[in-house]
Length: 297
Image (spheres, rainbow, N blue to C red):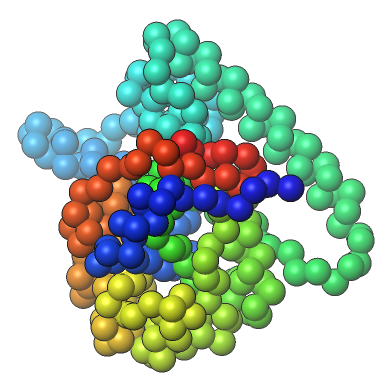
């Protein structure tokens, strides 16, 4: 049995003085939509083409994520390989061929693990034990594990608001939270918003926001809510909490919503945290242990 998460005494003392003590994520903002990456790439391409005076020409530029998915590591730039390794919590130090081989080995292991998991799930589908099963979880946003590590290392709490399809009941909400934790191999969320409160939050009811803050024994002004939905952000502001609009790069998604902060990616959320708490540095003694082992030291 793994030891409970441990944060060094130095960080425990610092966390008590931080202006922002917790971040509660809308699960929608943690997941990457199937068409989101293509939309972002197309927007970047159009901007580059316009700047080059090439009008509306189309470029078939593949993204690093697409290359990783296809296993074409050799076609990736060193920077892209290191970013893929960083997102997987692996060492990014080494010569070009060393980091390439490291990523290829990780991808092979992930593929094998997925095959084993699929076989196990297929064999246990008829167990009939009545336990809630999490629906298929879309891939997480790039940099999410790095962001969670950043928050955990500073003794900040994390909460989650289940997505619509996983908020039918409390068991489904908890199952989705567990699925996210397992996929990223990080400590569990400090709070999983109850399904009834999820419905209220998505209707813009501030009572759900206040209840979530109280459940974490914090004041609303010590918590930031991250979402891509206007009602959730509006409810957070009305309750006195901080709000951060996580922009979804998908067709029809709003580019800006009323909120305290706007983030284009997970790194933008970290910027928002640092704007409130100041730039902090991890104590070298900090260590987080989970059921998956020590995931950062």
